[in-house]
Image 1 (spheres, one colour):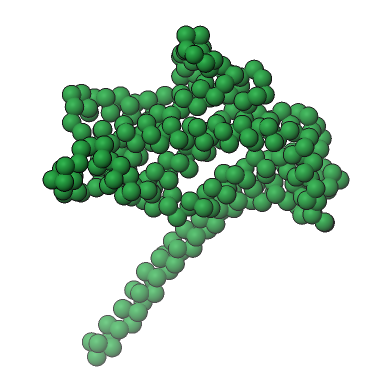
Image 2 (cartoon, rainbow, N blue to C red):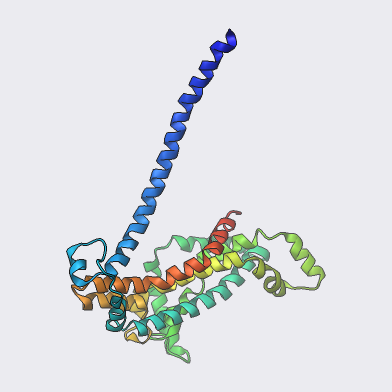
Length: 295
């Protein structure tokens, strides 16, 4: 008799506690879907408009009646994207290569070497992450202008001003340092027994183990160099080294009411970043998941 009376109470409790849990899951999925829509729909609309004709683009249509693939060719030719595209490739390649070298060395020093003032210096490095980017433009511009006057090659209107100031990234140093700190100390002890010093240990052991973090650095560095606009405009006066972002914004003024060509130019500008992410997304996610978790 007591069991019979207790059983409905158990079922009733389960039933009442199940509803809030289901509502929580539904609310979570709704928020995730809403966030995905906010992120994806503008991109899909940009691609859709880039394939429309002029009438459809200016008329507010959502889908093209017939894809106009020639829009990409027209935008490429009218905006002179070949020059700006090549400039951005060179700028990104030089910046990322230098960033890998300098940030890896600095991160290893902060993670594995002992020297006076290490913690204070690292704290000051992290403090620079709090500074707005525009604040450092003036001192950087003064520095690159002076180096161009006293150095063997000009910096303004040339690759040094566009790349060297960004080869030491505080965020990249922090990211790699956190990853290096997770490598067991036993590996360093074994390397010392074999006669390896810090540089050999870094090249032979640490870097191969840190491919995920380094690929994350590459992706962030490439995106930053590819999307740069204000600084390149500040240190260049001719199109010879101006990046694709400048070419795109100049093309917006030139295209005028040709909304479909503007969108085609936008797709051309963002395509390399999307391609790079798809090739590196697995390593990128692994690098983010395993870095920055240990202080």
